[in-house]
Length: 317
Image (cartoon, rainbow, N blue to C red; front, side, top):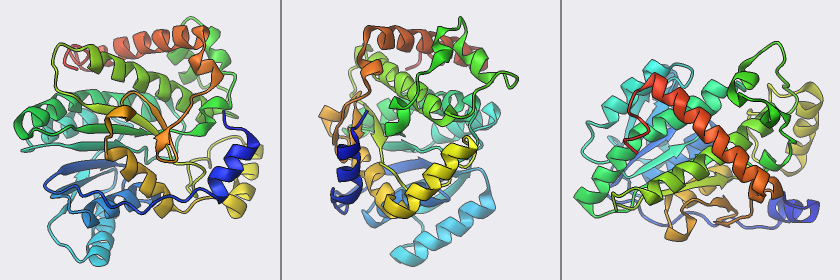
């Protein structure tokens, strides 16, 4: 977890470079792309010469509005595509992945959660399901086009701000899904911790696969950004966050820069937690033996859950 000094330094004094690396000829999917960071990342990708930028959005109408905004600002038509994708519905994820498999190529997937609800389905299960369904297409593109595809997830430094007592239960996912006993005051932090565990395990699985096509998988911490993601957290915490936003938050455009930086796919970023464009340090708990054991348990639970939804999905990665 960053110290107060490093957090303040990051928010006030770290200059986030304006993205310049080109994504020429590449096809990029950005989830949660109709607002804030996701929108701004998509805008950057269009500016940086991507051939196709797919906005994965829950509302086609809102996605079309976003598309128009990007086309007007970048003066480019025909690059942005709008695809329907609802993280709260597994069938939508399966249909979206099937459609993506029909693409000529897929080079980058930015898994940026767009919805504001704090559920295990939206924040972890559906996000990871879609990612795993897209891994085979990323591998295929690596072979056909000689590229190094990237799969990156929006994480958060707040993964270090929970004691995560649910880890002491036998079935972690079931405990989190039980509305009668759910702890919501730090739910956002818990979900970001679980997502981090899952991404680390996914990177491990991809690395040891006998298929040698490299895919860069990472988690990017955009820092403290002005978004709406905390509005369903506990009241006092949300109040505290709202006050901090006014004082020190990064803009959505700055947050979008961090997503683009992760999409650049430097080899040293594989399996890593990225912070201020660099490989950062995860929490003490994540690095501990207990953290590793918890990570393995969560991965096993997630794997079983996703296999129920789509048999064979785990073996395909």
